[in-house]
Each structure stands twice: as structure tokens, then as C-alpha cells.
Length: 513
Image (cartoon, rainbow, N blue to C red; front, top):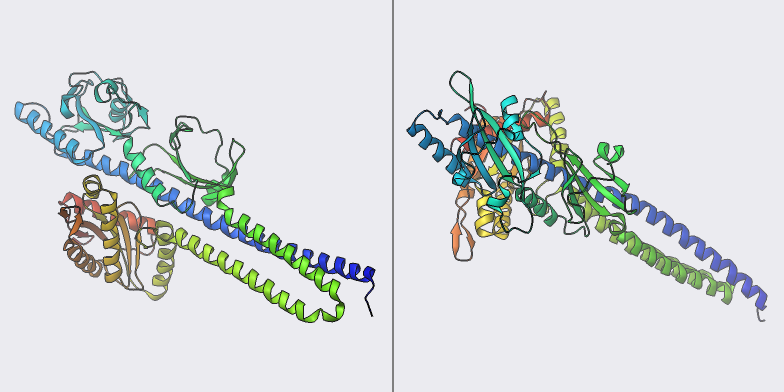
């Protein structure tokens, strides 16, 4: 007996509608959950990069300040020919020690330049310059980014892009504490652009990402050429400041995921309060969701047509095709879910590990260090904190290239994994900076571990073309006083690291030394 056409149409409509409804519900649930998860993981990744950039900028300024402070302690008053010669040698040595120094000079109390790098501006009156005035009023002065005034025509006569400097200066005092002059430097802003480029290399898996650096005067001083030099027209939302990341609409009408960090004042740094923003268009960040939505739509259409066909054939033959269809739908959903899970795992690793070395990044280190602190407090176990830095690493990058520098960083990470136990923490927290937390170890025990590491690492021979070179490391070791924060322990270890550098590098200094 033939089934009436109107009954077939009725079954066709019922099952087609059911299939569409089922597909829409499943697609909505999957895409909503995946959207939230991807937004959070990409946002955390951007915030982590912003924090690393802020940390490297602060650390770079502190290192240059300490260069000046160390040199100033060795400077005699310019009261004889011999003392003037010594001052000239100190200025020349410091100027040649770091390629991004654009100018270094010493003035008298009235602002007249007495001695300078390459004799530039000697005899000039700089008493009206903010870096001179600032050094007379405080222990040291760190200025915001500015264009070159006196030095533009001398250092950049044919340059397409004007020079930009950051000023660092401090007062020079005699044995009685009387200020006799000012020790000042101009740091070439290309240094910060190098930090930006290194950070962008770690974001290659997140296309369309920009890094913006905003000055204390709300000017974009680093970023895309279309925005550089403009005022920041879109203030950072309070939620983004609090969480470190968030979704925000820009003035051009586009929505961006933004990672946020700020270069803040600390015991080691009193300078410009720069803001770092790492942003990615939300459309690019959620591109996997768009692809999933289209795939789900095609699957939903196929499901609806299949259900409609089942209803058309007859109710009596529904069971077997329905089971096969359900299995296929589950398999497709499972495959898409597996793809999303793999993508989420990749994003999770990006949020917690350094992409080059595979070690923990700064954010993950601080989270896990707090867990170790609580565990150590419960069990009465000691913890040791180590700050480790590669010696003259910028010279390696300048001379042999970033690829050779990356090889050095990867080799050090491999040595760290070989020396550390599973309970210890090792992280890359800056360009050539690494931080370790050794569980159940005193400062002396940790020092022995780091000395073994330093000996092993110094034996490596790196090659670049026909050149062969070695790299050494310096480290500072302290016992973590567990009632203090991890920030404070890292700060103590950082001071020991600088003692190691002042001793000539290639050594390990512990708090007990």
C-alpha cells in the first residue's frame, strides 16, 4: 500500500525541522563555549607578552642607570689634568660598552659640558635641558621619550627618521657630598624597538597582533607607523587594567583583544610610567570559531536533509538510518571538539611557556612559586631563588645574529632541564634573563647547583658561519624568606646578580657571600 503524499510531506517537514533545531542547538552550545575559552586563552597570552615587554623595558632602564651609578662612583673631581684624563677614559669605556648609547657627557655645576663621548657638545651649555635640571633635584633622573634637539644635526644629518632619545642622568658629588656636576646619557630609542621586534617574533602564531607603548603624556611612542606619535584616543578600560586583558572597541570601530601591563615604579625604578598594550583583532582571534560555525552549518544542513529523507521514506524504516546518522553526527562533533581541544592546548602552552625555550614564562612562574611557598610553609622546607643572566648577550646578537642568540638560549634551557629536579621551577623571564626556584634547598645548596650549571654551560662552543664563540653566565642566589612575597625574593636575588656583574661577570654570588 502506497503512503499518501501528504503524510510523506508531513514526516518530511517534521524531521527536517527536528534536524535543523538539533543542529542549531549543538552549534550554539559548542561555539559559545569555544568562544569564551579562546578569548580567555588568547587574552592571557597577550597579557603575558605585555608583561614581558614592560619587564624588559624596566630592566633595560635599570641596567643603564646602574651603569652610570657604577661609573660615577669611580669618577674623581676634574681638578687636574690626570683626573680629566681618567674621566675621559671612563666616559669612553662606558660609551663603547653598549651600542645604544647615543651620547654620554659630564657637565660642571653650571651646565657646561666638560667631557663627552667623541667630544660632541663639549663646551655647550645644557643647563636648560630637563635631564640636567632633574639630576640636580633628585638622586637620579629618567626622562620620557623625546626628539633630539642639539644632537639631531650632528648624529643624524641625512636620516629619514628623526632620532628619539631617553635621558638618564645623576648628580656628581665630591667627598663632602657637594654637587660639582651632572653625569648624563642619551639612550637611542632603537633599543626599545628591538624589544618590540623580539616580542613580535614570539607572537607569530597570533597574526595581526600589534604592540603599542604609550608614554606618560598619553602619546603612542612605539607601535605601527600609522599610530606612532599620535595621542591614545581610546583609554584602556578599567576591567582590562584589573585583569590584564579584555575585549575593547577601538576608536576605528574594530574590536580587539587587548593584553595590558604597565612599567611601574619600584625600589629599583623611578621613571616614566609607560603603558604596554598588545592587541589582536577579535575577528582574527576567533577565526577558528568562524570555521567551526561554517562546518557546523553544513553538517546541520546535511542532518536536516537526512532526517527529512528518513521521514519521507517511512516511519517504519527510521531506526537504522537514525542510528547511523546519530553516530556520524557524534563523530563529526567529536572530531571538531578534538580539533578545538588541540587548539586550546596549544593556546594554553602559549599562555604558560616561553615559545623559544619551552621553559615556564614569567606569569606561570609567579603562579607556581606561590604554590611552592604555601607548601614550604606547611612542611617547614626551605626554598632558594636564583636570578640568572647571560653575560654580554646583546653583543652575541649584534655580532652573530638573533639565530645564533636563540641557539644560546635554547642550549641554556636544555642545561637547566638537566640540572633541575622535577620539583624545581625554571623560567625565562626576560630576553636573556632566567629565574629559578629550588625546592627544599638552602642558598648554599642552590649556589652549588648553579655553579655546576655555569661550568657545564661555559664548556659549550657555539658556531655562526666560520666563527666559534663561548658564552658565560652570572647569577645571584638567595634563600627565600617565606613570610615575604616572591616579588621581594626575586628583588633580593636580582641585587646579588648585579653584585656578580660588578665582580666581573662569569660568577655566582649568594646572599651569604
